[in-house]
Image 1: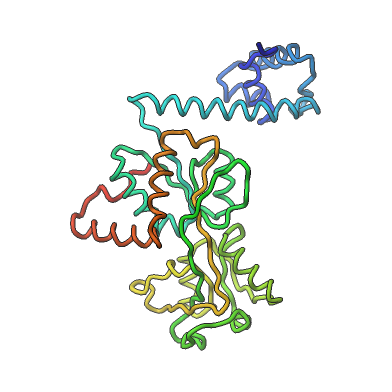
Image 2: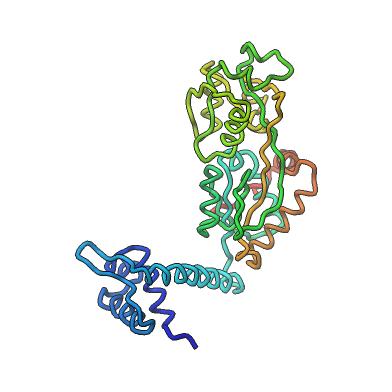
Length: 324
């Protein structure tokens, strides 16, 4: 068997993460001497000094850093096991944590989650939204079970499959000099103030990479983490922007229009989930559902239409997700 106590290893993980015996004691609802005893026991069992103590707190030794890497993995696996066990109990409804971009959270996810819940009554979902890079971090850290974002960085810990391809278009006021054109090139846009998405946005990365590839430095007026804010600024004539075509609703954004780009740009939106979660019952159901959606040429548009029709004809509350 193992030469160390799992309980002591998990106590060590909290001490190493917080760099404090007192904070670890608070988190674990233990006394500080109890935490110290666990650390002393683990050091005795491993025959290694793992933590250096000083008045300002504590730090890890070289050996302690190595043990901490494994302790993190064991703690994470233990948490996943607890979640899986809870899901297996009939009296407990697990919460599926889904992350996506702010734009998708508003435009697409109400239809996806609403339709998913109609097919899986009682399913509980927690929706998280942020920049693509931020959502990637939440997936890798275990904060979210599934994320739907574009251009996710490759990771051996993650499984992915394509969801939809979003075309980027130039967004501008209807009275803008470029509005009458059938298509515009990136050099045409260069002399106009550009309003772009924030750092960490997949849209921003694709747009700036395209400009850079043509040796163009755009005149960036402002950066924003909201498509609604960007559209407001464009509608006031402050500049132009490049967003996914789906972000513009002709019925609502009456002062705006879109023009295709001569150098087509796309966001490859995909569904991503941790390999370690692929046997989680809640994740499995959602992944099966999302894969069924991808059989349509534009699954997001199909959902928008079907959900809108269902809400108009039935006024059903079931088409709206129950978030927690």
